[in-house]
Image: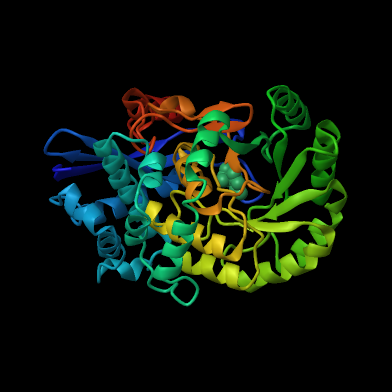
Length: 436
Ligand SMILES: C[C@H](O)[C@@H](O)[C@@H](O)[C@H](O)C(=O)O
Ligand SMILES: [Mg+2]
């Protein structure tokens, strides 16, 4: 714990996923999964690795923002940071000049996530534990001391948070054992990206069923007839008892969302994800209300930029599934706040993952949620996408459609150095090839 941070580097790492339409949806037709990848060096040689997820061109802007934050981190002993993590979170998010860029949203908040993810990784490594286990072993008081309660005390006070955590101590060991044995349930988005032709959809779905997957997400929102055909195809293949979810990635206005999703109700989706602007809380509430009689919930969160937004979504009954994101919110600190608020409102958390590295990171948070907060698996599952795991030194392990708890110390953010070099933009080999 005597490690002092002496340097922070950030690199622009991009994968040309758009070439094969991996990751495509109704709003992002050519996503190149990318990361602003951070490495923290300490005086004793231990390193911390962190990232935030972005798409292609956006990465260079996030890299600049990380560089702007670096000065707040370099020179700090790890012990000083973690003994007042709330204070350190505030230092990063409340810098009196840089907060004008957010506050706590957009590019500057993505950068905060990348930096803090690296600090959490460093802490877990210093303790020799995977991050989920570091959190599980923490005293509830220490967990609460990592959270910035500013702006949420009207819904969740520090005392209430502590109370939730203390109550959930009962049965903690059994739940940890259960997770180690069975893993955390997952669903797959890999079968049905918007740009995939029907034949590919069919093949991927056949393979996924064979591999034990029972919950499937389909991209919708560009063309209603296409959506009907694709949903029918998937529903027919998976049968009436498996789970189907649909995701429109913010394509519609409120009224349009209600009528479009009503036309897809016959396929019995569990949820419609991001039906409209991610900022439109009351719009989501109207959609939730209209779709409730059809048995369809509203899910959102991958672009819900901070705990204040989540607070209001919960207050307004505007979502029925909370999709936390390890890189959109201000790292573990802010995610803890959202997990606790979701618990208070008894709304299930189903994390957003995929991208590059998001599965690796968020699995730690949802394991903590089950073991130490929610103690509940009903209607809960973590997203899984089967791309780019080979670029990580501790890739996710999936068995029978469940995430098995990571064993290596840290936050699973470290990338294979040769992959980083090859994919660095613009000088990496992969990008030289694509430009010629
Ligand atoms: C551009 C990305 O692939 C998104 O489509 C993706 O994150 C998606 O919304 C998801 O829920 O996985
Ligand atoms: Mg989505």
